[in-house]
Length: 292
Image 1: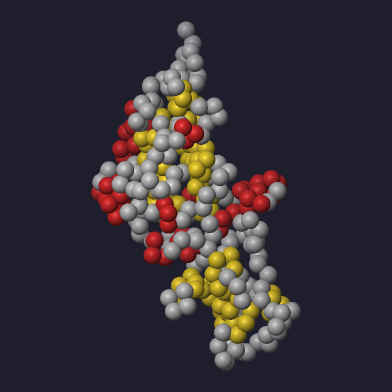
Image 2: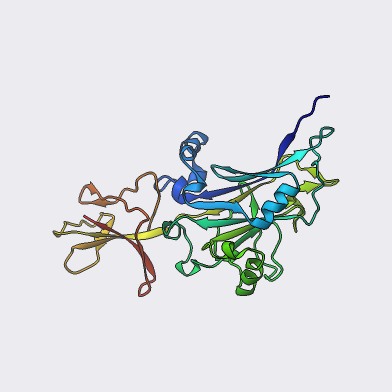
């Protein structure tokens, strides 16, 4: 008698960061499909975030015959299905079953290139298809693909909420300098965000959730050894009386790819990377610095 083990996708989470996906001033989501494919060709979430299930969830995954797999844009959960019906999980998935995944930035440039307050660094963002019990009714839920809801401080847990959720983690997990936590329950607060359908069936098509991180804009500051000639139509203006420091007239987007044209006397100035970003409390602006 032939015997086979078959897995099917249960749900997916995609994490889009516009620092890596936009091209200069061109927005990724406004590009043609061909250009989107080009931008996605070198895109890997693992370049800037570690994404992994908690120890508790790893045990649940094994017990439920579920498999966690990383993708270039995030991760997927697969479920073993029955031979008789490949829309039915081999082991029933309880409505209250929850899986938790952690997001850990790989280096300091994550906050530099992400459009969030610097004061948010070290605090915990929550993305789930259910609202944490300690949070207000208005707390946002994770959205499905193509809703393009930008992550903001609205997703930050309160101090009590962070304490409650961290209590579910191991001491090692609590000490990982986490950025966020994704919690997905089989039955969500809103039916459209459910993972399974009655009676315990895999949804078709499967839910694909989206987390969208916006790239930061900064004022670009240029340092010169000799005073350059600045014309009225240029993209920069003098910041100091000496004329050796110029700043862009408007904040400009930080992107890994592409080029933003910053003109000075008929020439184009270089673009900064995300290695050094300096907030200034006196004027409430954020600066990127380039030495010429």
